[in-house]
Length: 67
Image (cartoon, rainbow, N blue to C red; front, side, top):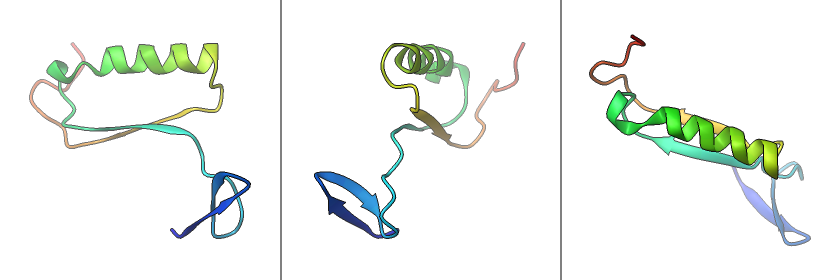
């Protein structure tokens, strides 16, 4: 996706502002502590960034199923 700067903020080629997001790239497994990441993201949304998106990208790792 091509971007341009408009009024000091990045926008898409269509002129729409980019969405604010957190990106996590890792395998999905307990030692990566995604539970803490989710809690921090929820706090950030509640306190200051209500439109913040969370994107988690990764393959399933060992012991990924909920116990």
